[in-house]
Amino acid sequence: MSPKLDDESPLDDGTWRALGAADDLIPTSPAEVERAEAALADLELPESLRNYRAPTGAKVATLPAKPRLAGYALAGACGALAAAAALLWLRPTPTPPVTSAGGELVRTSASAHAPPVPLLFRSRCERECCAGSACKSATPALSACPSGLSCVACAPDNVNGGPYRLRLGSMIPSEAGQKVLPLDAPLELCVIGSSNEAVCLPALGEPGGEAWRLLKAVSPLQDLLTGLGIELRKRGEASALASWKRAVSPTPDVMCKGLAVQLNDGTETLGRLSVFVEPTHFVALGRAAAVPDLLKTLRRFEPSGIQPRIYETSRPGSGRFALVLGPLDKPDADALRWQVLDHGLDATIELGLDFVGNPRPAP
Image (cartoon, rainbow, N blue to C red; front, side, top):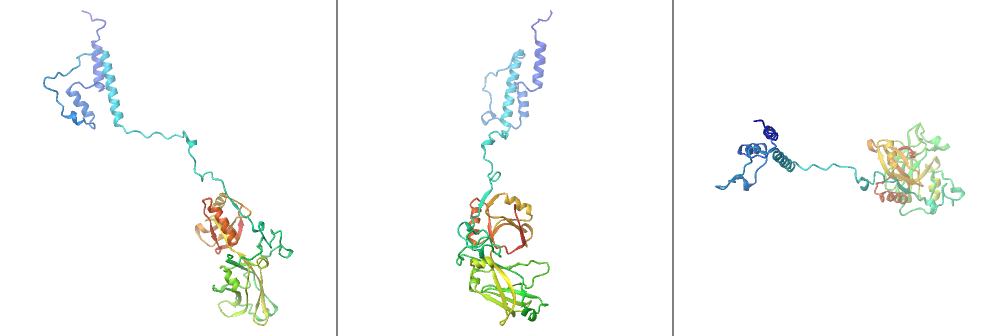
């Protein structure tokens, strides 16, 4: 008898074997269940099912020996869905990818695009003044200051002023001094205050050195008011060849013109020199090992009314160069420093005792 056209037995057998080889069929026999459990060794049955036994006399449903092709397909689909569900349940939840969506809603760091901090220096000449090239009310005698100060207050600050720093010129021997003094010996000018030890420097300057020398010390206001003393000595000796002493008040005349010092041996003047009394407070905006680093720091600020300067210092490493504003008197320095602090940045007040040479203006 010829096979019927709708006889699908060969196709059914091939489909059954293919699905079984791919483990896409739901296990229906003890052997298939054991094999499925071995493939999923990490899965455990719930406690309630581990010791399950079918009731005596219960009928176990079995699949027909040769289901139709549609039944195979349905069974395969259900098995695939069950396997996929198990894998998804066991697999850890992946971290969602990070995208830039909504990035415009996140506020960027304030320092990335922070505007420069304004530093407004309000010169005392805008309030009151009596001397200096920037002082419109200065008398002709005090309109240009040999000290280099552009603005000097009218009343000396004898309460909060100081400390000050002294800048000395070289001594010029008088005719009597040229006869009496041992000019071929190393001579020193020693500045003596009431609370400090003597600070000395060469009296006649040094070849190739600066004409004006800043003392490596400051003079408290009390030292000036009680009497500033300067002695001419031989280097290494404590006795004075000539001396000068007087009480000094930081008046407009003194701050503008300085002091005309005449060294006397008790009978006649042996030498003369000029001494300037200067404010010595600097607002330090930063230090660095190289100038370009300080120029980057300067871009964080927008100073007006005052010129920033960069000094080389005697410190090594990261303190070699200093970006400063000044020199200023103490009240002005304090006011500028607080402007920096109010914007969350840092600044210190220094006396510049480690500064070397002349500064360079910072753009």
